[in-house]
Image (cartoon, rainbow, N blue to C red; front, top):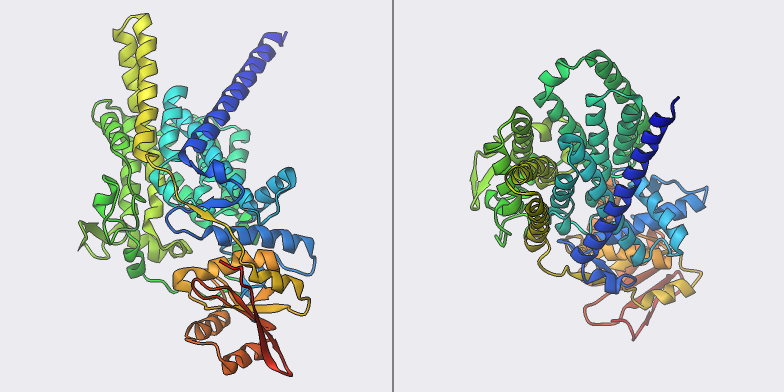
Amino acid sequence: MNQPGQQKEYHNRTRILLIGAVLIIAYILLTTFVLRPLPDHFNSTTPAGGYSSDQCQTIWFFWWTDTALSHPDLSLYATDYIYYPHGTGLGYHLCPLTNMVALGFSALTGYAPNAPALFNFMVYFAFVLNGLASFLLIRVVTGRIGPAFIGSLFVTYAPYRLWHLDHLNLLSTGWGLLAIAFALMYFKAPQWRYLIGAVLAIVATFYVSLTNVMIAALFLLVCVIVFARRLLNHAERKRILVGSIIGIVIATILVLPGLLQLTHAAADWPVGWQEAEQHSPDLLDYIMPSSRQQSTGRGEAYLGWYLLGLALVAVTIYRSKEVSRWGIVAAVFLILSLGPTLIVSDTRLLPGLMPYRWLFETVPYFNLARTPTRMIVAAQWALAILVAFALDGWMAAVRSTLRSHWRTVTVGLIYIASIAAIGFEYAARPIPLIPMQVPPVYNQVVSDPEVAVICDLPIRRQLQISNWYMYWQTYHERKAVNGYLTHHSANATQLVDNIATWQTVDSTQLEQLQAVGVDAAVIHQPNQPGQLIRLNEETGARSESENSEP
């Protein structure tokens, strides 16, 4: 009696699995093309992005998560392995879900937690997940598979993401997209499976990136406000409201353990909106790959003419309430991404009067991100939905005006042209790679069991050299005075800032290191081999150098 219904459900599931498999293969192939020449150097390099070395910090967290979980006496959320002897909290930076997924890949592939290849696996994972999640979101909104796929490419391979290839937390927006997609599915058809999916995805987003969860939550809030009338007229609006409240409560309970760790053993973050202004994009950066001196970075905020053109077509030609509302959502986040001050051609207008400042000073933890350009990802989500509407309308016009043979050819050409346009605008050149090398001087550290604490010199945080010290620590595994975290303990800051003022390393400074429990110092100088200075009470210090260090 139920066989026809069961058969239909079976075919639907088979179709979903087939589409999912095809999409995964497509995103893997496209990611391989976009990240060229990384696949040829997968085991020895990592993608540089726009900052060059923040992947060192991420790899350190892979290693630390594995180390902490392997030793019951260590805390996952706090450590004195960096910023010794004071230590610091890790709550803001930890990204435990990302680290656990990385360790899962480590177990499957055999790569060590600090292997460059493991970081590259996670970059691939972030791109594929983002592709699938953005496809699902656009498919839920538009109901079309082909346009949803094209729209997902604009989201997944946006210049902003290529600029942040060394920021795995910012690449991992797929969890937030899944939360939004499931929430919109629940608003359309209030079923418990969609609500559970939304709750689990938003919790996952929190344990991947605090910035991402705030952007996803704000995106959902804007959608609820913009589409309020539709929700109020929904036949099951009471069920939607009750379910949403229950979902928010459950999600809050599940993120509370991580929320309590955010500021544990870490200093406050006294950042004003003026610093956010310094990280704000120029309005002109949105329409041309920026080489402007004072912008946030070459191409970071670039949206692309094809994306903006199709979105404009959707809003102006395919006029409907649905399209107009998504245009409003896109406009909201475009305005927020401009930061607290409007900057046009390096000229500051409306200083401190843009809406971003209100969020920055009002919403708890919102100022932790400090970079307004991160809002551009939410604008891209809404713009990609508009692109899908435009493509769908374009293809509908083709189908209604051309004969069957020419229909198929023309639609295929539209898809090919769209993918080519995205590749031309977004992935026109090979990405820079960073060789992940460990100086040979650390072989001496590893071979000496009496060295338990080291200090790498010089400490220059503005040059991000301490990022590399953290990466090299995953090799020698000794505690270190060094560290490179945006949010860390105040006492650690005082010690590191004091050491950063040293112009030379003499016996007096070595005694200061010895006084805080340091056993050895590693001296790095440009174009010279590293030097290991072992400290002891009898002789004060003795040094050895490694002549083969690059």
